[in-house]
Picture 1: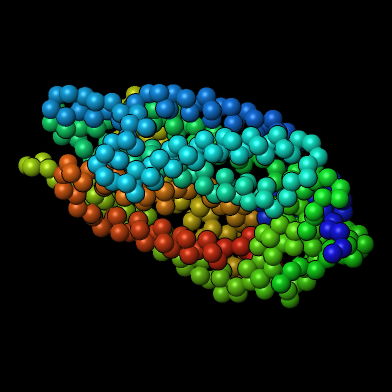
Picture 2: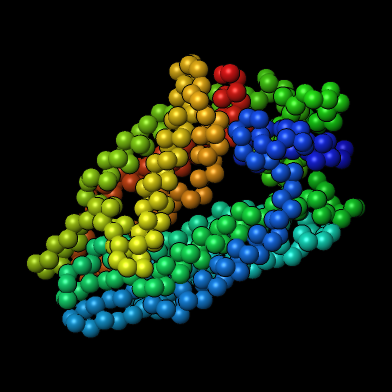
Length: 207
Length: 216
């Protein structure tokens, strides 16, 4: 197959918002006025900054309670993990798995995959670009779903308000967890997917 | 079908109009206008460059109108109702947001409000602002391009469908504590999520942008 030509090689820029092709000298897209950049040179720094911020917020999110449940004058605190175990004990296996995946598996997987992509695309690589892109797309698509636990806390808090008899209140971990999800979403968005192809070593499988 | 090769088009310097670039991998293609009406994929990374549905635009606009109407109705109708013994508590979506309204949680309340109501609503209004004149065959409103660009940028932050799954989890958690009945707003939310999913299959950046630019 004939070698592909990239917009940068042709002296133009593709707008990331609308797909318009503009001259490389344009600062803003003539069509949608969004800022143009052939390659985001700060991409790597932004990815690491957001990723580290997300990691920092993720620690208190797991240590501190997510839910404060008051029943018969007694308040119990439950963390993310405790919530999953509680669901499991109540034989709600499907829901336990959903919460486990959304609150633990996805965030941890995101840290690993974004870190892996950022390190790998720093220098020339021979990894199949389609596999890397698949990783990136999965992370970008699935990342938002971590927010589910925060919504669950909000719904429970609103529904269960019967004064001292039974009430549920949000714990500080809800804030930390929401921040962590937002930060890692920003980390994924900061990654410049065009780098995957730029840094592909000569002779490696293109296609 | 794949887009044809771009090299020949670049030789005519300064004419980029028939060129289309892949926003994912930066590959460049020549796209004749008659081809923009058919589905096209990027040959390198497989990203859909055009979906090529001619009636898609009308659908997108009418679905957006429906969604706005449902979203506005949701705010005022009961969402879920919980009964335990003599206690009874009916909540609306706004009450759910207000669950976080004390002390340090206030920013979280605002964020949740934005994620489940405001941003989905903003996206719909931006799409309507940009595309309604196109469907009606009128002149574009000022800033239509910018509005459409923003509707794409906001997409990952509109989380109505995630909220729905959150409701399902919450219902299971409360199953042995109380009886829960589902209000009208809940079903409207379900409809919104489904309509949004269908709308997303119609939306393609290149097709929308060409529609918007042809108008000028």
